[in-house]
Amino acid sequence: MKSLHEHYCKKPDNFPLEKFFQKGIGRGQKILLVGESPAGNGWRKSGKACYTPEGKLLPTGHRLNELLKPFNLIVDKCGFTELSKCYIGKDRKLLKECSRKCWPIFLKQLNTHNCRLLIILGIHTTNLFNWLSGYPLQVGKLTKITLQERNYTALPIYHPSPINPYSRQKNKRIFEILQKDIEKLL
Image 1 (tube, rainbow, N blue to C red):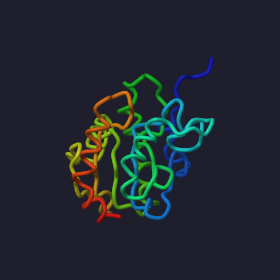
Image 2: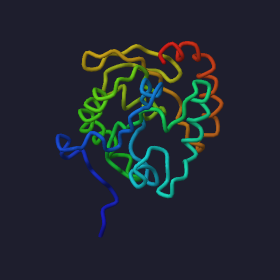
Image 3: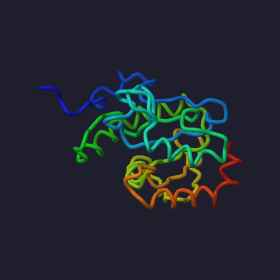
């Protein structure tokens, strides 16, 4: 029987840094979108962040594009990675430990990307990031942080998935309020 999980956290030193890591292009190099873990129907099958295996942009990608549009960016042009590289399916109790073990992979990937702004996708991802990094990031607030002696600005947002009907409006408001500050980072 095939496993419902894919664990890359067991051998983090052997993990290929380009896996589940999309490099940004142009202005998008300065942004790194940070998700929680690879989705079942997302890039673990398609090889591309926010896309289905058939090449269709997922609803989360559409919502991210709405937020990025004022900056003349789309999700395809921005850097993108996940805190946990493991696919855990619906077994969420595995997420914290997988993320802890994958944190060194995330930091190595971050060092290969010359970004300035980390956009952390969702409250759960923000909580994991805070636990791993030691920072008290808050959704909707820009915060200067240092990871491995490199400076970044972090912006946690509500997860752009349409599952939460209120996240779209809340994220639009966050980006409207912070538009000038974000523009300076790009």
